[in-house]
Length: 303
Ligand SMILES: Cc1cc2nc3c(=O)[nH]c(=O)nc-3n(C[C@H](O)[C@H](O)[C@H](O)COP(=O)(O)OP(=O)(O)OC[C@H]3O[C@@H](n4cnc5c(N)ncnc54)[C@H](O)[C@@H]3O)c2cc1C
Image (cartoon, rainbow, N blue to C red; front, top):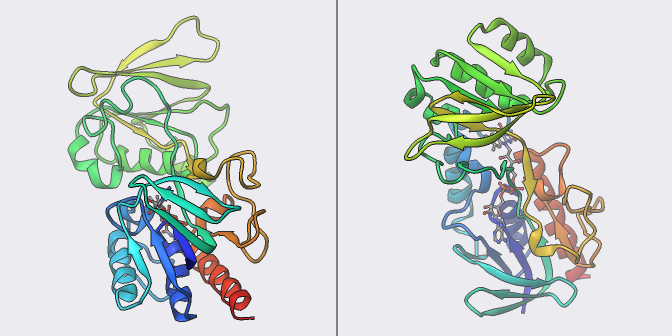
């Protein structure tokens, strides 16, 4: 029986673990990936907005976190795949069959990139379907590309690709781009960027690598194909909460609803970081929420 089991070892889970350890709680962290760090592993830009640490990339910041927690006494299991969770009964069963029990849980499972769910998207990943414009931009220099989405991430990535690609087509299903006005102004000034609004990507076509995309424009009778060598999809994120469905109060998008103490609708089950913060997901917010949950748990256990 542990005092706390933390699910997820991104910034929120690691901060909670550091605090739980400092407050003398018997703590186990379960991370499904082979590495800790969560989304930091896919941040290829410099991070300058996390107070106290400047980092050239998310990986660099992750390494600082790893260095800081390495002398703590909490247990950390990576590659820990959870089969099922019973939040009310405070039990977890791992895919390995092992059963774990804890007085309290902290859910810190974060978010993942939303997918379109269209043919070719997964099959051609890494073969024209890009993961990051920052990291892969040079590979696509001189090639025509397509970016899907209408928010800041889609606009920023389209602008980045426009620096090296002859044409960039931005495909957005809405009537208006949601990106900040600064990005929209810059998109207008880039002659190689074409914006297709009220349009959806239906298919990514290619045998061994991306050759074309199929686009459907609203009101058109049939889709058309456009030759491109690269596709980048930036249509937002979704919370990793399937494991807890029907056990917790969630909003309509699946984010966990919490109190000011980070507690969920089930007693002694807390949720911290992006998984419970759809409006302002940040590293600072995630680490702060982790600390709050740990302090609340410690005060209850010690009282
Ligand atoms: C490209 C990019 C740039 C960003 N830039 C900035 C920035 O400049 N400044 C800033 O403040 N924020 C930035 N962010 C956001 C920041 O990375 C997140 O707010 C932060 O990582 C949230 O931390 P978290 O611990 O809540 O979630 P995550 O980082 O998503 O970590 C969640 C962890 O939980 C694990 N997990 C999920 N499900 C399970 C399960 N069932 N069992 C076990 N483990 C599980 C995941 O594998 C992951 O390791 C950026 C994000 C991206 C993608």
